[in-house]
Every structure is written in C-alpha cells, then in structure tokens.
Length: 224
Image (tube, rainbow, N blue to C red; front, side, top):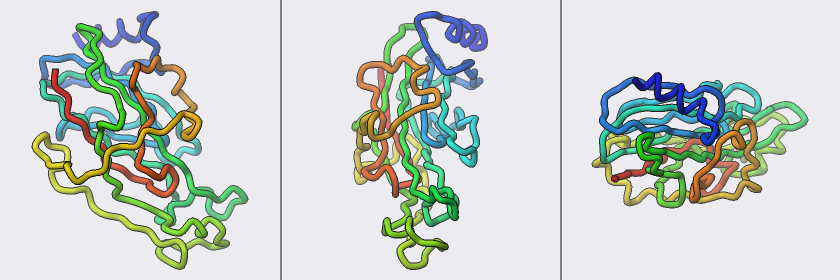
C-alpha cells in the first residue's frame, strides 16, 4: 500500500520533489511524507526508529541533495535529526592542503505532510531544539594554517557524545538551544533544494554558527 502511495505522490504534478520517493516500511496508523534538503548529510529518526539516511555519502564533494520519503507512525510524533556539515577531520576544515582550504557551512530544511489530508504536520523552524556536539575550529585562524592539526594551536575543537535517550519522546530538551533560522542567502542551498515546493513557514535551520558548528542533534514533537 505504501509503495502504491509513494508512486502516486512521485507522479503527482502538484507535488514537486527531488527524484523518486523512498518508501519506508514500519508500523503506524498515520502515513507521512517527509522532504528534506541538507548540507551536507542527515539521518532522520521518528523516535528511536531510523527512517532514512542521506543517500549521498558525506565524503562526496559538494554533497548537496534532497530526499523525499514516505513512512508510517503514530501520534505524538517525535521527529529527530542528526545533521552534519562535512569536515575532513577534527580541525573542522575541508579541502585541507588545497588552495581553497576552508570551513564549510551547514544547513537543513524539512517538512512533513499527512498524505491522507494534505495537512502540514511539521516544518523546520525556530521551534525545533538543536544541540551542537561537534564544533571546530574554535579559532578561525585555523583556516590559514599551512598544516592544520586537530587540537593544536588555533585548530582546537570540542566534541561530545550524543546524550543518552535523546531521541525518545520523554527526553527533556529544555536546556537545548532553539534552532536558528537562516536565510537562503546565508546558506546558499543548491542541488535539489529548488526541486521541492516548500510549505509556508519551512525554514533553513542550524545552530548559531553555520561554519564552525559541524554536528547537530535536532528534535521536535508534533501532535495532531
């Protein structure tokens, strides 16, 4: 049934998406279409259940792409993302040793729709909570290092483990910062972003710093 629905959604002229729609089997009474664009990589969970990972490896140069998928779940929905900007190592830099050695920048936008009613269930905005678990470099002068080394000089970094149980509905995220909404001009989305018709209110989110804050955990609870 989900496969038939996904085929219909993918071919529907009024619903633009990036490529084919992935069908994810699983339990649940509500069928939901998710659409995500990420720079550079994401994994999406409903509660503790992994729904989909970005199909383009984060190691792919300029790995910008969008994903469209259908899955089933029950209310209340616990929507969770692990979002990563590409970094070659813990310096937080990319293209190390090349003329364009630099810090990358991240960004994530997503929307979730009830396929039966067409109702928007959730969009990424400042109501989401996002915790940074990897930040580098702590000093932007690291970019100018001829041989940048993680943890040395300006190339220091911070990295923490994912909090235990953070994907579960009852987890207390009250001390997590609110997501920051960033403009398209700041994120410069490409590679699939324009293939999706984004709903009103859907925003590109990240933490405060698009360049140095490389790995985020983001979560949002949605009820009908």
